[in-house]
Image (cartoon, rainbow, N blue to C red; front, side):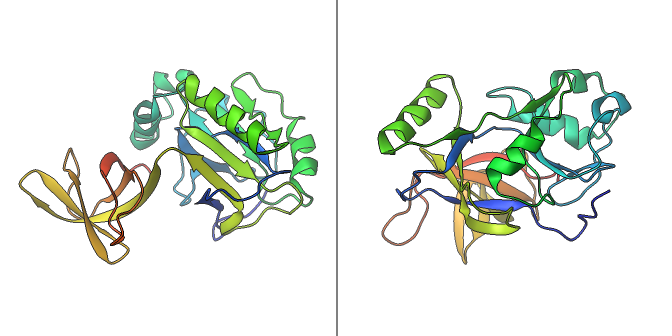
Length: 238
């Protein structure tokens, strides 16, 4: 068993037109990030997920960095399954466990990918990762994912070992940015989120004061304010 209680998962930075030739690209899934530690499934913040026995049966004794995914455009469905946290919930049948890395396994990404291929379980998907040839190839991969309703790409540096925490070895390529803020007030139907020392306003939806809220936006103004900030989800499932 891998002890990951205090181990941070690898977290991405936004792609800023860096040279990513030799990186590997995979679809950015709109699911719930999860860690399998060799014995139990948990969120990236290590809250135990009560998955059915059949769902985790056969998983390896080493750690997996993965995502609980219900398909494109079904983030809220997946988040609700995790939030309810009931092993007998029949909605588990609609989730897949998509594996994209091995947090405690030595070796570069290519070597870790070879090990991942040995996991053969019906509802477990080893996420396809394609080596980027050049900028034109990257654009083709991005456009292909977007045309199918996907969010974008995750770009992983191929020559390094798994890195814990925020890193330039993992880049997130989307046509909008996402981040999180804390709801500190709700005024006239708008939630006021504390974000990087400023206030960002989004439609309140179902959040309450104190919630951690994910929102998306289209770049920053010259004053550093997110443009067209929109609510995505309350992060009450982690």
